[in-house]
Image (cartoon, rainbow, N blue to C red):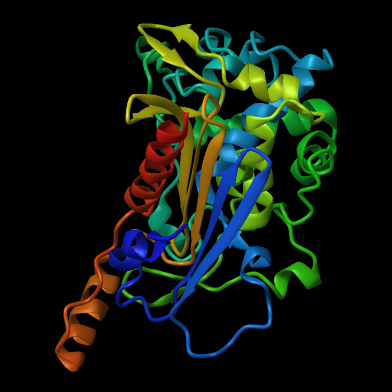
Length: 356
């Protein structure tokens, strides 16, 4: 893609440790591009570098639900209360697994008993299944059921339920239903020693290195690590019908009327140049990700970055101010990679439309 450098220049500017990997998908073809600001040359091909993909994980969890439903192991219309043991909370018998997958359960983004500041560097690692059950035992968001409210908690709960029903770990479900059929060999929550050697360090927008995250019971909401190669294969599978997961992927593309909105299993919906796209993004304290595709034109894009779009705390702010004072330079602002992805995708869609 000729103008790619122009599209990414604002994002890559002043990010000293940046690795940005991009996949451009056109039906049967995938092209990879990378931008690196580090002086040390890596022997790892950029398309095989591993990133935390954050909330793009939610798409995979929703597809796992649909695959298990296809095998009649579970139903998306099942009430959540059916699968939460040791609680007698009637609210859980008013919301379904479908509500969890479409962010319409009313559950908040995080549980009220989850205090992120207790372990700022790895805030999800300290939250246990016992904490989750304690929260659910008296949670009541009945008045919000049917309304859209983005919920890490809800998707984490869904992933937890799928593991309980199947008697399998999340990675085992991922491999069985998605990554093995699609030959996505570099996508998992838990990495082996070889994969860890390709797992990049993550950085806050200040340029400060931050620890990798352990999502614990939230792994279904944001625990996956992957490469631009694997996610490009995933986007390609969503554009084509010649793969083992095609029928389930197609079902995830169909809108569901819930409350007063059309929702999707895992996906977000948007429009670029009047063309409907399905997309999702992701962010952890040191990584940022974005993918999107349009089925009509059969094009898609993946962007993975080892820079976060935000600083984590006041400490990071003061660190940034000190660095600015020493270097006499304005630091790069923390911005979501989405805007860069949308610019690239708009150019792709414009080109494909002109060829039709």
